[in-house]
Amino acid sequence: VIEESSGIPGRFLYMENTAGSAPSVVEYVLSPGKLGTVFSGTPPRITRVNPGSQLEGVVDVGMCADTLSLENGIVHYQMSTMEFTNALKSSGNSENRKVRFVKVEEVGLKSKPAMALTEEMTIPLPTGKLGVVFKGNQFPAVITRVNSDSSLLGKVAPGMAVDVVTVKRRDHMEMNASEVGTLLKSTSDIPGRMLKIRDPAYKYDFARMPDELEVVLPAGKLGCTFTGNPPVPKTFRENSPVTGSIPPGMFVDCLVLPDGFRRSGFNTREFVTLLNQTTEEDGRVLILKNIKNCEPSVREEVFPMDKTVTLPTGRIGLSFKGRKNARISRLHDDCKLAGQVYKGMIVDTITIPGGSSFSGMT
Image (cartoon, rainbow, N blue to C red; front, side, top):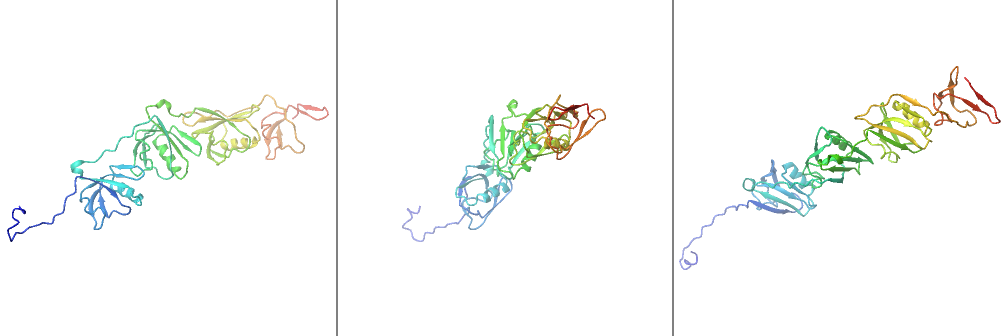
């Protein structure tokens, strides 16, 4: 029309300034810094684009943030406004953040791709909150959700079950959701934790706590504390030689010494006293039992049939009782025979250098 009427004077061109409409889907790479845009609800819906915002003229009010792709490869799906804004703030200095905005009434939201369950995987856990939800009143605890701001997003899949959590060289196993949550929360400041998860379909491959376990102790201090009746290992020093040998969830049922002495049914005070008296003995054996399904053994002491010890010079630190036979009634703190003789043993014979021998003594 303009070309055909080019020779006619007095023509007018009427123009109207109207805002253009964004397409149904806008994928935009964000610059570092703030967006200058207000979001609300779930999914995050744009309620205001401030003047000077990097999204001004790019998106329309009412569009929703569908996905957020971060520089580290993590992609957030189906976010709330809080999850979206937290992810933006934590990556505010990144130059490669990409947001997919959509007119949700027209195209909907992308579904999060389902991670495939794997037979088994072990993952190092960072300190702090994990942002993972577990469910299950019975063992094993199952992962039901990984939050969009979780450090484990993309590393673990919902549906996987907890096999073992390792903290300071101790393996925690056979836990329900409450036990897993309590353990992870109480150890959130400890670096080096490991999480072993597996497909719950492989139920026979999960680690199981034994009903009974024998642990051979080295000579010297164990570097751990015990509590309760029966004694339960409580804390371990960093250099404890038995940290990895004593699993959580087991109690001390019996102590067996290399000479055959055996004692069970003790409380923590009695057990620790016996440990301290036998510190120099190599080859002591702890018999541990499962707290969940085992009862402590009855109180019992089994002595060696006979034992010959060499007496040191000076005070030996023993007390005796008995009208017919001398019986050891006490080992004093300075006893030089601690770990070699035991309270309750009967003195049969004392031999003096030179040939003299004494027996049948009270």
